[in-house]
Image (cartoon, rainbow, N blue to C red; front, top):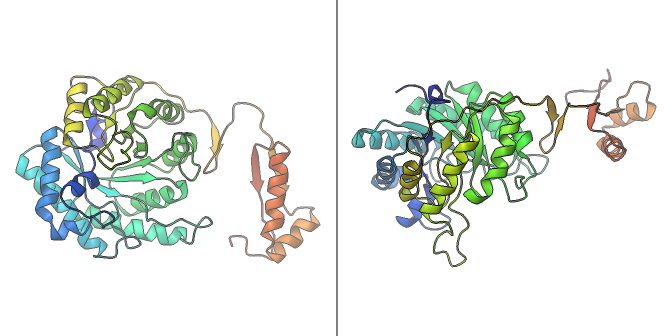
Length: 366
């Protein structure tokens, strides 16, 4: 098959739906790691892949969401990833339907520093191992999904791009307030991920299709990349009996977003082969809407983007040049002094902060 990125702008592309939902229907206990089932219950995994292929999906996600050495303890990353890719490829051969295999990479389950105790380098190494194993096993692309921390998404994307030749898609998961759990907004995600070389970006999990339009519109404002949408089947019922959006409503709601310029569709929690089949049918024959996009010049942190569309105030106080107290703080390693300077400038109206720790007698990188 051609590379999946060769289809960008030519036709709509369909991912499969939820793996976890289907595994639970097949007996996976609540809270149990699904990745070892690649080795212990391979026929169930193959059957799920076959069902999604028969529903019309173009891309199968491997059962490897948590397959990294930080999160997976029941078996090795290499065994789980290799078996996961192999099972997807076997299902493709058995059905005879051409499709791509996406190595599915999710979060480590731990918070990165300074919010948590996980170093960036340790996260990078965990994602590197998964990416290398996935490419070696024959995956066609890498899907980094369900990210709430832009720093962790950066670690995963960097590891994938530096250690594999595969195209990489990154999707963040947002709350109704329009930010991820850790505060990342679509603009910051889009600017950062496109700048780091992602091949497509988007949204998955947490929300249903009803909440997607404002997120899509914001992403389209800040990126030229293809947009990927994989929402949940709405919200789960309190009694655990399923989700509140039917396959018909799911398909109809998502189909309307093709008019905004979304190119890649799929499903997350609660979706099944029926959801994907109806989505494919709803969008059958639709062409990709070509949207000319010009991204504004901007800088961003992990939680805020500042367009350079007018004069912007840059706080310059974090700079030892001519500032005795700042020099002393740097020599002592007094981070609180620098943070107080940052807060004072922010409260005074600075849009951007310049951080300069250039002092010959200190370890500037540290």
